[in-house]
Image (cartoon, one colour):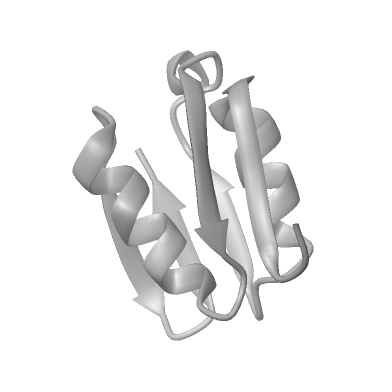
Length: 74
């Protein structure tokens, strides 16, 4: 789908890797135990920050922005 990221039962690590390609900044997956959480969904690429926020609302993860360009998921 053009302009969207679509995931079907993939690891959070794979999702973060894909989001990094489009995000203007650095995303760190701080806790390695989170890497294998499974993710499914379709996300609009026009706002990667919204994708990250949605993930924190639907998965057992948290997000901290240290700067405008540095995001840590834990």
